[in-house]
Image 1: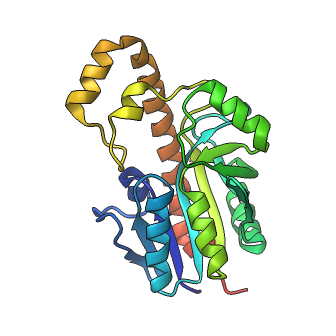
Image 2 (image 1 turned 120 degrees about the vertical axis):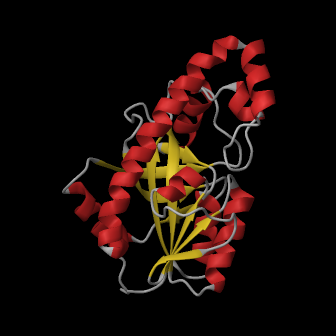
Length: 238
């Protein structure tokens, strides 16, 4: 067993793996030779976390958390093991033998989707945005952190795995209140968030849809976390 670094954007995603509160940007050893780092949302945050894990001399990186569907066949709670990560100008493959081991193990218990994930520096907020991104990339889902993690893995010759569950499906828009009035950890700035909802109550339906989808995504993450923790993420030096 070699050293593995796991990067998560949000505290709720981290709690699927580790119950204690994490300080943003500070890696914690959650099992022997398995390190977890809470990054915050976005490319720069994930890049900083990934670099801190390389200082710990990890042999592999995992991008862990939720993602948005851009393929209509996916629903909230679905599990994705990505074949590759697409950003604006590059395509990074995940480590094939590691991916195969994890896929084979999880598929004996869960339904798993394999495909590409596109990592964007901007939030893919509307059903129209999601459709355009799907047509452009033929990826199945979108996140905002995996490109930075993949770049770091590539630059340091590290193995790479991406494990994501679907939060919002293709028909769910990200509401204005969420886009404008949540912080880098996805936490609402309560007063502004509520005022935005009052001024535009039509978005409240999407807020509840997003919340319900996120709960399903976290439930799936928690289930697969238990399985993979028991097997130490099935990562071995190949």
